Length: 384
Image (cartoon, rainbow, N blue to C red; front, side, top):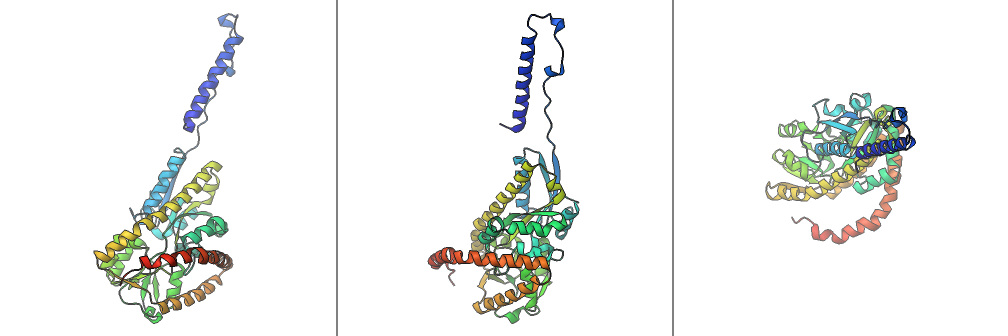
């Protein structure tokens, strides 16, 4: 039964009971002598407050899973709250520029936003660890950190000074290494390379001698096609096929060492979030967690078919990063992470917590996941 129907029917029952009681009390009295008191009136149904919110995102209109996931989140919130919270979603540039999402939520210009935390690294350096860490945790691991290892509480602590409340709202899974206009054989090939790559992975590329260019999704293809950048990473086959990167770059590298399980976020203005009744905050949190799972499943379900299409129909040159290059990138990544962690106290605190949890889950992962995947790996290896 809908809550409003329940309240309405409860009011009618109460009214009937009061009227009946009044009738019994008046038995034997003349009609004109029946007292008219406030108690004989039906109790008023208290109207529940409704909230009309706006969400801005970093994603282009209609981008599958990312923008459509934000829109799905809004729809599910409206359904779960029986219309008490409605959220109008604006894609990147429709209300604020893509990379101004965090600022808009922080200032209270809008009530909530959707993006990835490494986009705010210039303002909140420690935020980068909550999206993805090079050679870090995969989706299963980073969700374990958030929901079971204290990661979410630490994330809340980092965002609190900015009047922002974060929640995981999706995960891309292990990403691809990116699209390149030339072969990548050694670390020296990164020198002078202009690459669109955000977050801590971008810091590694910069340390290797590359030039990092941060672009929103809607500007990447044109920049790659015109040679403004030499390479780009985005997500994986499901999106990369739609973005058309195969038309502008010859080599499609894997694996995505820089983003092995990138978390997407929904962020709320803290004052607005805290002012909600407790049950509505719980609904927002629950829908965010559901969207987190839904998003990962969309990527996992769609990447395989998209990769096959890229290879068979578009003749994409799929290339694995050479093992020596991966070793060099890993060493460079470890150095970069320590340097970035030294830039401020919150970054050091988050980095140490992340490292500790990674070691903790890594022991179990070796016994469980690694052993299992090694058993079945031969069946699914790409044939050259």
